Length: 164
Image (tube, rainbow, N blue to C red; front, side, top):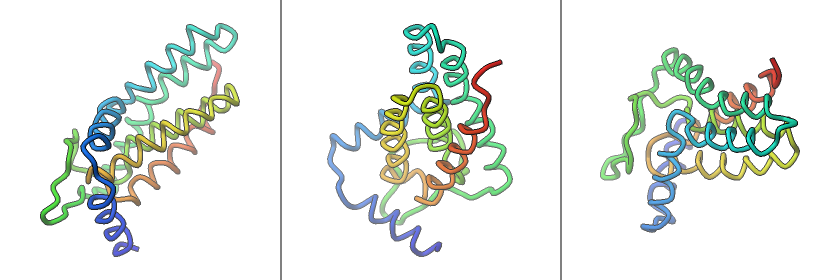
């Protein structure tokens, strides 16, 4: 498993790279820091949809909460970020810990919760996939970090109550 993870990471770091895609992946990564993109999206939806306002606010708050829970998991596993000789990461991170990906955890948690609020919320998965795949593309995470983060996120998104 570890060898396949490393090979897939190397493939993602060496294939399909263009300046435009790298800029997009970096921008998405920055927007995903601390769940910021999900806070903004959830707040906008809360303003636009008064009948589901409380649920959208919970979705907005879920991103940062998921990142906090993710960090607790990182402290248990203590997996260092990947190092590929001759291929430095194309971005920075607030922690040297890699497993699981906080960007994937928060993204999939919120996308799952948004889908529970409104079926069209499933469109948030497009953003979640793009944001999450950018992490190994930039060399910030192993693919398994993203997969684990996505699974943790889906679980959180299914478990969070959408009303107080």
